[in-house]
Image (cartoon, rainbow, N blue to C red; front, top):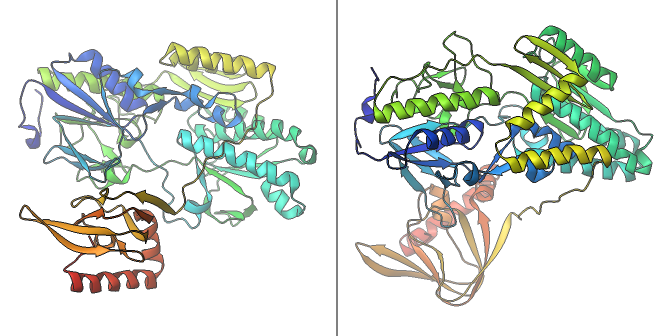
Length: 547
């Protein structure tokens, strides 16, 4: 008999609302399976993800080397799950008791609350460098498409700088590349990175005779612990033959702008450090009041979150999952897609009534690319390495792509790279300045009462009115002009705006974002004290007109 947590004994109407959190393999495939399993009149499906695309994660390392085009490894979520409503926001809070998920603001700084009847959590993991000196500032994570693009751009930039650098020590740092983590992701990254640098540097006359240094650091006693020992040894020897240094039983414990610091006490001078080490679950999941196991959400064999059986399921990298045989499932695409099928069956059973299905998939095997026409594979107990494994790796991953468009484009990418060398165009992304500018015409609103505090506004020219609504009546509080500021009260006290600010004349203002304001406030005590004192003075003079 299906057990239901106390919080789920409400909203028992005919049409149910299902929320899927996360747009990776687990989340998108869960939405696809739910579309197949449930009729539109039975349930509406919404998927919350910060991007509107899904990434084919196994091929992400090949974006670094340019073997695959940037857009060929992604697919719009709306095409993969056409019946699912896409909410392109960040999940900020999950309220099990009231069955509500709160997401981040859009263009207007107001949070959106989404009620649900059934919740599927597939938010994956995040790179967590907190507590390790210099890691946040100087180590490049490798988990997302943005990470791959950022790393590729960085590699090209270091080669361009090394080409013209006359300081031999700095030049050597620029040509040294360190990757932390010897699992599948780390090995594939170091392999593609090495191939890319060695091929591309031939286009730089000053670097043709400059050998790069490539270092793979792994905490275990052998790389690829997911594979059999013989295949891991094959991979080790192959990478070493290509000139990659493999440091076992060691790990990255810190970083600076000049060096990678290892636990063994060795410092490696470098300007490029990449981390593929295991991640933690997002902060919004860490805050949930539910059981966790190994830092992930604990689920039962039916993939229901323990304590919320019958209404909340978790799958993918954010969940601690065991099969019916008791084996812990690895964070791979083949497991995530099977978990999605199990979740869809069980959500359907919760809506229609019926028994839940246990997750019973044990895995078909493992594949890992070593770059340069080589791979390792273990399929149904059969071990393959070298070129045959590479062909098998490509054939399987090509067949698993969800759309014909992707299959054709990636197959063409692989064919064309045999004929032409990889490109090394740096796709420079323009970074937004810490302080932005905004122009407003008379009558336009800077922000509304009740909005979230997202910016502090410094008035350069023009005037604005501060208006406050109280008991249905709108009153004029103050008029601000050049040299004044507004919006600081909400940021200082972490509350919503207590007034509306509207331009009286044409205005030019400077915007200091909440992120930058908080950074200055926490780092420079004098900055915080000045703003707190000015805000207090203004509050006293004008009955809290700071908004």
